[in-house]
Length: 296
Image (cartoon, rainbow, N blue to C red; front, top):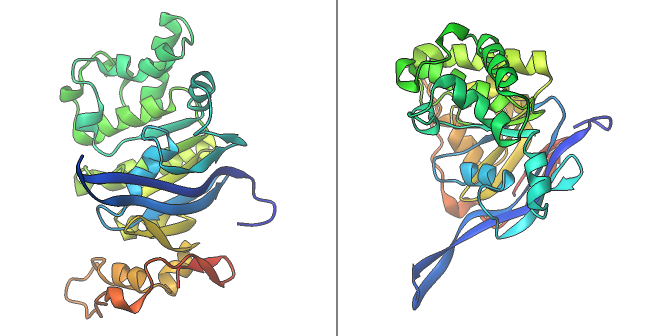
């Protein structure tokens, strides 16, 4: 981050712990998210990566206050999301929206596509029914869908088209910040690039800031300006994308990058086997190079 960059989102010492075991025989708490801190500046695409179960989605849900954190703070444009009143939270959420991973489960199958896109406007009491309909048609065109299909139901669309409906819904309130939680991982490979290109085009056209949660490292390398790596609920490395992929410092990051598939399956590769004993899992981030932090 440069000195002139404007902070949009700041996460401070975020934690989410879950009790484990029966009521009378409690085990140690599951630390799904454990002391996570990072900041995102206006206009950037910030990547949050790690293996399944590392806490990426839980972190996002805590930021959105869909899950109540155990500890920490989330500041969005100068307001603490976690202590905001219900009225203020509703106002904040007009600028803080989410694209969910699987459109087949995030879209209500009983609703028509236009009603799904209009729903945020209805919840916030914005515009007349006619104006909401016009906005839905506008958004259909914006995400590359035919507005004439606005009265069809989700099952009448392909997977990629359903995700475009989800994107249109996320943009209905003209947000400035979007959490994209694995936005293409549930799609066929043939349409992943199309949806990803759409997201990048929308960012340029609308001035959006993204928190991109992903496990596809090739995608992250292509679109993210900075990347944070999670391992067992903690951040183990945070750096500009180019620096992270060129010179990873944490053993887990090196192992994760070495496991990424190569374009040529016959090309020689050096797999890195992670040995948890070679690093301290409780270490905090320290700056190992300008703008490059690792938990060593």
